[in-house]
Image 1: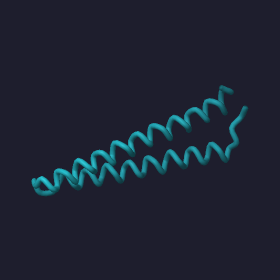
Image 2: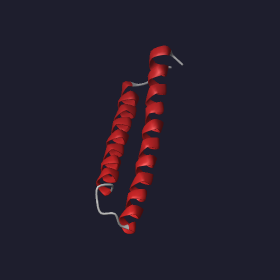
Image 3: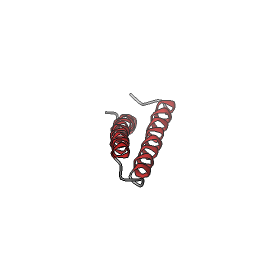
Length: 77
């Protein structure tokens, strides 16, 4: 069954949005890694790392959905 172009467009947009969110999380973590050496900042940095990791997992998930839809559209499976 062929995927509707609108479905592929939506999946691609979802993937791209997830990548943008991930990049923002990476920048947040990077910013926190560049501040003073206090324990409070260390905790914030660790929290930013956790958020970055979660965003990366979302990118992987959205990429998989998009790739699967492309395979169904191109190869029929």
